[in-house]
Amino acid sequence: MKKLLVMILLSTLFLSANGEKEDRTKQAIVKIYSTAKIPNYQAPWNSSMRSSTGSGAIIEGGYILTNAHVVANQAFLEVQRYGQRKRYIAKVYAVSHQVDLALLKVEDEAFFKGVTPLTFGALPYVEQKIVVYGYPMGGNTLSATIGVVSRVEHHVYAHSGESFLAVQVDAAVNPGNSGGPALSDGKIVGVVMQVIKKSQNIGYIVPVDLVKHFIDDMKDSKYDGFADLGLGTQKLENPALRRYYGLDCNTSGKLINKVVYNSTLAGILKVGDILTAVDGHNVENDGTVEFRNHEYTHFHHFVDSYQMGESISLDIIRDKKPMQVNALLKHTADDMYLVETTRYDTMPSYFIYGGYIFSPLSRNLIVSTNRNRVTLSNLASKWQEEDKSEVVVLLKVLASDISRGDNDFGMWPIDKINGEAFKNFEEFYQKMKAVTSQYIVLEDKNGVQVIIDKEEALGKQVEILKKYNIEFDKSEDLRKVQN
Image (cartoon, rainbow, N blue to C red):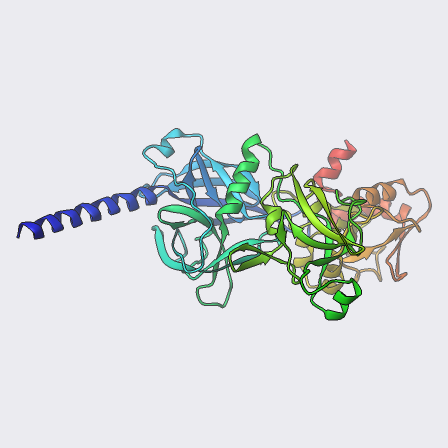
């Protein structure tokens, strides 16, 4: 009888301690209320307001960890702790739209009173049990769902369109869960990010390794981002291709078929080099590396583990001879691609010339319409060149008596202005302003032309803007340059 009482007492103490631990965890979970200013990329002078909710977790240093997409384009933020009804005003301290992470700060110290911040664990393994906390749709109180890790590999992050390591989980994840922590043994192993629509319990979390990288990056109060090598590569699985480059069955890697002109590897690597190892880790013929025993992912995984400004070693084969070079990590993908990755927290650039609306091509603009989608998506996959770093499009033409016959032009990439090429949107804008001839001739790569009578366009400008209720003929960034 005495033994039974001792067992009951120990069991009660265990359940009580476990309950206290869970309660401490819950108190660190935060509901986020966001009001965002959403740009209209088809009418770039306009925007709309949208309210939404998300989740977050209090971590050491007095920060709230959440997703970038929860607070993207934010105009006003409030946060609310578990078990409380009061909302506190919050501000974005740091954001990485690349890996969909953000840190928030609350100035009122009362918000953090009595909270034990959550700490970080390690990258979880397949079949490892996790608990996802957050405030998903379907209710107002805290939700907790249990699941396991299904796989760990590179995946496209919906928020940025870039590819990074991601953890797939089968725990139920729904809108509102975004930004909430995924815990294992009480420690954060990831941040809930996205789900696959029309699937059953397939969700993704940003792994803790990328979270730590982001936080370390921000220690100097400046976000540098995740580096891009600026290399185009090709798989080496084809037998004839391998024989052509003299590779034996024991050698694997990826063929380098492009070195971007402004990459730090320009002049160091050459087209035709074989990339065989990154940071000492062997690159397989399909471009993957073994990051854990029997687990493979994209070779860029080891590049992502370094901070900007650091160097990483690359093993290559050139003319059948092995070599090793160092790559200085200095540029992000936006420095390399002709079309920038998805933009947030800024209004789109534009200017209007006699009802003809021009804008730099962005991924936001591409997804905002189905017009000319194939051509524009192809441009988005291309690298920058020394004489071309940005695409400019004729966004649309406002109907008027001077634009008859041109109203079908929309999302039209411009190659030349009065026979001259241009490097980017700013140079295009300056060339348009500097035209002294009677006609402005815009031309695409196929020779199709749009002709604007300068005097007529400028004479009708004010009337057209008034007709379409447009206050400014150019975006704020261009107005600042002009001033």
